[in-house]
Length: 167
Image (cartoon, rainbow, N blue to C red):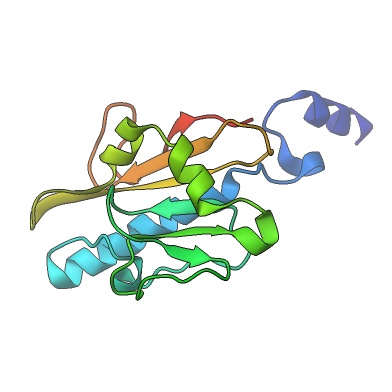
């Protein structure tokens, strides 16, 4: 048993001792979102850029911003006013718990990454790309992933791509 623990501690990616990686929330949530998008598409023959329309809301304490479109208002997770849920194109991080503001993440997000998000094409021949953006270790760098309902260079449909690494 001792040999296994020593080996586990020395291998990168072994989570038995140190717990799940901080970006696990992002990757797992993006996979859930794309599953909701597929289910929504099967009944409506289109994807949505409005999280409430597909039945998505992040859990309390989320550290990431979830962005469904490059433009539009986002639902806040603090005491400031938010748009009606039907108009929102994403959710900000839980600022009360995490101390990260939605605006801080958006201003640091490269425009080319933001422009990747949203609907592309005309439904039913369309796809959607969703991003999650966070600061997991309180330095200036961001952590950013995207997921899409279509195949992309470097990832099959429904597979997250890591664009910016914070750790």
